[in-house]
Length: 119
Image 1 (cartoon, rainbow, N blue to C red):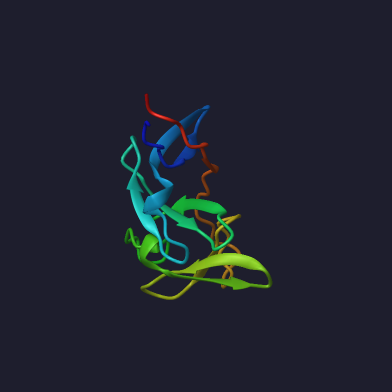
Image 2 (cartoon, rainbow, N blue to C red; image 1 turned 90 degrees about the vertical axis):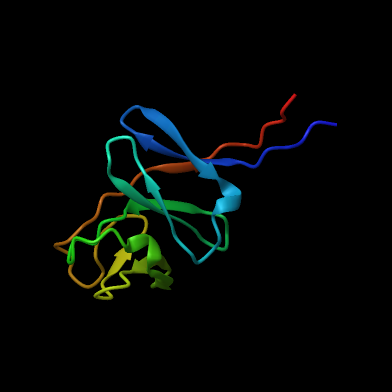
């Protein structure tokens, strides 16, 4: 019997879906950083319900690529990540800073592809 592959997380960049990592690399409540083809970084997250999120990894307050290392939580039913440096919280669906609505980080559309069977 052939092995079953894990679902793959993909990000939408322009008109294309880019495979980033297997779902098994995502742990609920923890972030993962991914280098994109243009040199930017994305911070990837998965919640306990299996929903995936992807935002820019760059903390707009410090300029450091650290949002993937932030603490995740919810506020009014909305998933967020708090920067590990200055603790500002960013909504994982909209990218809007919950502590200063004038600041927004890029959000990437994400999806999990169904598992495939290798032959």
